[in-house]
Amino acid sequence: MEVEADIASGVPGLKTVGLAEGAVREAQERVKAAIKNSGFEFPNRRITVNLAPADTRKEGSAFDLPMALGIMAANGELGRERLGDYLILGELGLDGRIKGVKGALPTALLARTRNFAGVILPKENASEAAVVSDGPAMLGAETLSEVVQFLHGQHPLEPAHVDLAQIFRANAAYAVDFSEVRGQEQAKRALEVAAAGGHNVLMLGPPGSGKTMLAKRLPTILPDMTFGEAIETSKVHSVMGLLEGQALITTRPFRAPHHTISDAGLIGGGALPRPGEVSLAHNGVLFLDELPEFRKNVLEVLRQPLEDARITISRAMGTLSFPASIMLVAAMNPCPCGFYTDPQHECTCSSIVVQRYRSRISGPLLDRIDIHIEVPAVKYKDLAQGGPAESSAAIRVRVAAARELQLRRLSARNLYCNAQMGAREIESFCRIDSAGERLLELAINRLGLSARAYTRILKVARTVADLEGHEAIGAWHISEAIQYRSLDRVAA
Image 1 (cartoon, rainbow, N blue to C red):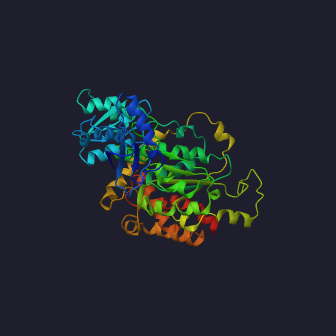
Image 2: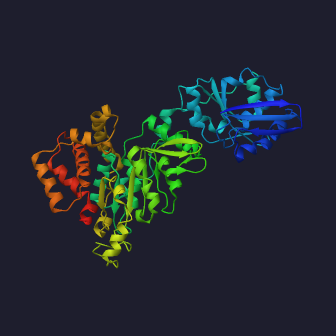
Image 3: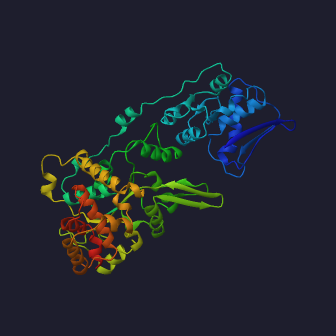
């Protein structure tokens, strides 16, 4: 965006053109008061501010500072020579203070791409922008007067610097850990396999069995975030104003929207499209609790993001794409009352009610979930056992080693985990011996596994073999993968 200002003879007033939304139109009064209260003259003439390109809608308060500087330059109070060297953004208070805005990190990345000398922005956003260490100078300012003096060469603005290593050390820690989970060894093993292969997971179990507790700890066993992943994730949170003083997000996001969420809230959208919960979970985990309670149209819009790892939103104004590389973890009760197959409680649901409840999840969505696991109620002896269980750090070591194997195998095809494999990769990397073939055939014919389970079993078996460091897939890997298709067995 480029801000232009013109002062001409005519009826005094300030008019903004260029498809400005509410907050941008209201900037007129903020800019006028900030200029006057900072000790500068506001021209009592006809002022026109143009926001180019004129056919793109503008929103937010980040235009305040460039509008004020443009007016002052047009009035002769500010030299124009240095204005074009800097990318400028910031909201103005009535007293001339510069307040924080959304989107400082993407702005800094843009400034690096366009070879600006620096970025002038609110001081509270300077550390966020400074993570782009090899880019232009990030100059944080607190008042309009400081910026004017800097552009006159009278007052320096110190470039912001951050220690990325220190940020990762200080923030790359989770508040929860797998060592806090008692019992549920099979579910924990399934989540380890899911984390190692990037597989989506569906957990079925009665209320209180620990499904949410397990899901919240899944990010703690995923591989540590790389700097590139941290930048991608932080960009989305920066645009939404959710960094909350952090310079960079260095832990895997965990988003758990309520089942009353709309489709636009989940995948993004609106008149001026914004990222949704799926994009906020980019490079992390999206947890959908009580999956059948989500509206059907909301669940169906997940199909394209899960397949493409991107969300494309088309509007009359144009098309936008948001990143959406996530692990989907869903949880549901086995029936409406929650106690179907629970030996300790009697289920009050008829078979028709159970079938109707489960049919709320469509086949195409289930096709994109590789692992279905049952999470039974925890027994007393498991709750009362002494000593902590295995920690997230210990599990993460095994997961990272398996991911490294997959990266070496799949990087030539621009893939990074087994869950992303298509038919060609499955044929190349998931070959099984005769014993595995017989076992898989027996499972499909005798246990009634669906046809869609076939490729899912092969991909999960590939991950199980990777966790053990085996290049060949054995019958025991196939056997474990078959256990993770509980919904297919029930459907039969």
